[in-house]
Image (tube, rainbow, N blue to C red; front, top):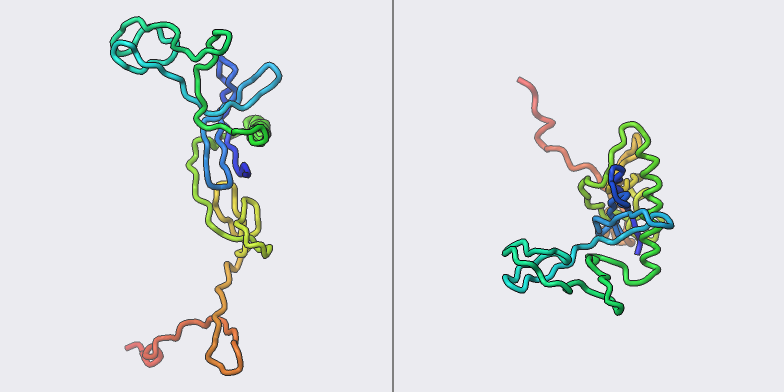
Length: 215
């Protein structure tokens, strides 16, 4: 797995420890949004996207967030003890991750990629005209191949067969004065002495066009 893009949305005016929201793109194919960068006691860390846990009202069955005192639907006082508690009886879980890594290696990979980009985003934010890319739409990267003979799909910054370059947002940028991609040769098997490769020629002109004269 490869983290191919990270986008950061700084939260400088946040009154709590939240420093930024971020999204990650995995293998140019899958986006996970709403990761959070939290300022911890030993430095920033990445929290996975999560949702608040709920419990149903014992009277009307309406779902309320844990630790809610009164039901938001019928108004009755909710019973205590709905929280998920640890072995010592302490409330231990009010949120559940929506998406998360299942091993430490994957967690370290995500955290390093996000925090590295977070540091770069802090520097970009100091520049005039800064604008976050977090809310920009994602575009599909064209399926083009590298020209190193491996047949692999090109990644951002890689050179491709057309001489163009793929930007992180998926756009293909051709170099200045690029002649464009060459059209493939056609295999001509009409000859008897083996296959001959003949390049494509221009389509024949209209046979009657040469005989037309202006009135």
